[in-house]
Structure formats: structure tokens, C-alpha cells
Image (tube, rainbow, N blue to C red; front, side, top):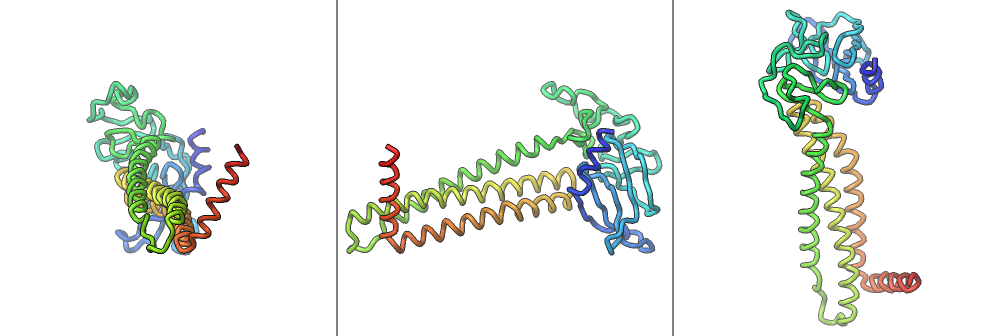
Length: 279
């Protein structure tokens, strides 16, 4: 019951449209998959948007209810149900949803650092709501995906920050000869701060884009190209827009101070007055 409630809660959140069922069965009309948080097929919809078929499962994939007559083998977690044996085909071996176990032993040995993996028949570490095993060889966890994407994105953002900082500092000091030395020093201090902000903005954009890209490739390997494309699109759409707007703002401010050294002087004076007031 817990797994069923979990799936119901995610139905309206994770809706995925994939290729039509009818492409290999020309007499059948086109249908589209609508999936839940476990990537299980919950509904089939026609091209006009109406629901023609519906499915309900428990946490381990036992079908509790099904309506509709459209031929469909891709059900629990989006995997193929073999109608001949009644098991789900997970590449390396078959999965029995009735027992929540694989029907053959794990081809991988498992690891002592991951005790559940030592069970040769266990599916998704006995926690299919949070984990999955689409290959029949290892349990895939959402936490592992997030950790891998975060680590790669963090390294990439650190590199971009330092490169942007070095390039910005290399551009300092290019002033005409008639600009007084004191003015050059004041302008350089203001630009240094702005260069740091711009480098931070570039690093932030890199972090979110890299995070989405890594998660995208992981999704492709585990759940298929359609799921990965949806995740990547959503990540770029949300974080990319925020990062682009922030970068444009910082760039505009930087350009303004480069053309108006007097304004830079006022900013410095204001900062010094504020520091003196605090002290």
C-alpha cells in the first residue's frame, strides 16, 4: 500500500511522453505513455490527450488494476513484461514481481561494502520505491546519481571560476596614459571585485549545466534516452535561465564601471564609509 500511494503522488509530477505504441502495429492507433515516479506506465493516452488505458501497481510491480484494451508490454518501471512467463525482462535476468525477487542468481558477485548486493536474488535492495535495477546486474540509487553529478559539476565550476578570474585580471591595467595613477588604482580595485563576481557567475552557470548534463547521461544509461532528455531539458530550462540572467546582469555592471571610473570611485567611497561606520 505504501508503494501504491507513493506512485499515485508522483503521477501528476512526472509525466513522460515517449514514442508511439502503434509504430510497429500499423492497425493500432497511436498511444503515448504517461509514467509515475517509478517510471511505471500508469496511463496510455491517445493523440487528442484522452486516457484510453490505466494501470495500478504495488511497490514491487504486482498489477493491482488495469483498464483498457491497448496491447502494451511496457508496464512496471517502464520495463517489458514477457507474456509467455509473466516476468519482467531486465536484460541479464528475469524479475518476478509476485515474489519481489529475480528468478536466477545475480551474475555479479556483489560487494561486502554494500551488504544487500550480496543477496543473489534480491531486487533493488528490497526498496523498489527508491531504487531500481534495470540491468539485472546492480541496484541503481537516486542518491548515487545525485552524488556523481554533484561531484563532476563542482570540479567543473572550480576550474571555470579560476580561469575566468585569471582572464579578468589579465585585462586590468589597460588605461590611457592621461588617467592619473590614483584613479587607475581605484578603478582596478572596483574591477577586481566585479571580476570576482563575474567569475562566480560563470562558475554557477557551469555547475548547473554540468550537473544537468551528467544526470542526463546517467539517465540515458539507466532509463533510456527519452527520460534523460526530459531531465536535461528541465534542468537547463530552470537553472540555465537563472544563470544566464545573472551573468548578463554582472556583465552589464562590469561594463558600466569600466566606462565610468567616477562611478567606481563612488562605490569605493561608499564601501569605505560603510566599513568605517561598522568599525
